[in-house]
Length: 395
Image (cartoon, rainbow, N blue to C red):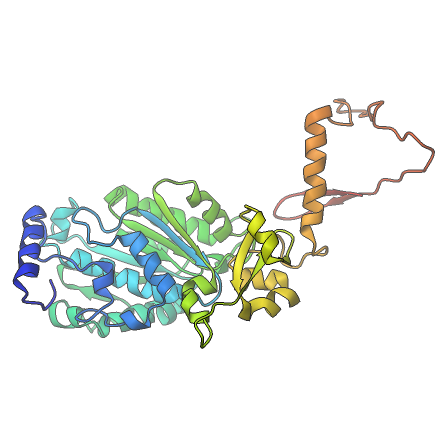
């Protein structure tokens, strides 16, 4: 409950508490939490970040669970405010739980059981110094925490609140999460975790934390993945595609201009200048043509970024639009040309079948797969090897 003594507001608060008797005070909505009496940073939070927070936590506080859905992901361009998002989301979840009369009873835990909020980064130092540092700073400057629920200052590398609520930084090692009742967690820098021939530390960390949340709290907890998709076959891109198909997850992929809000790009006369870009063909297209095409590959971009997309399309798509490249440094940059050939071949094969018979020991071309004029044909086959999967190139 805020500082307002408006009788109408007090009446609404009391009605809310009567409906949800497990609470000793109504939690703030995520929008209220950004404002006075709480974080007091509303005017400094980018529009896109605010929208993502509301999409995950709702416009009004829930009396049943900490967020609308148990899984969420925020990805996109560099500089959209992913760290700011984490530094708001985790304190808000702690605030929500501290508003309960008895969090352990609410979640069916034994008295004295610790309820943990885990923030997982690429290393122990990263966990403590970057995102955790921002989370701690937000809580230290939050009037609500300072006056009602200050954390124990004796602990410098974690935060321990009343009611046995802990906030813990952790790294990619699975042992970091052992022994804790993790209600909510944030996996940070999704595509920067260590990957070996036998282990993807981000994948294992995700599975471990998610399993701990769901086994103890079912769908009442929340696990958030944040980080840029640096490559199309990385953990972040895989998790993005997976969660898009998951009805229990909310996914946000944000461009830098969506983060800032389009009003940021209007000129002194209030005019917003933009251009249209085909992310598949990697080229600027005329405005009239864009209006005639209904295609998810066509995006509208503020004019200030036009040179970035002209000079280095792959980098601009990754860093400004949040769209990862198919490879780190493609030998053939016009990837859509190859994809068009592949699609045409698949369509032809679907209609008339493979040009090779089904023999595994002595495969032969079928009779129709022959040249009808005397020009010589040559095939070059490149049996490429990749640690992430084999590929064959034929020209």
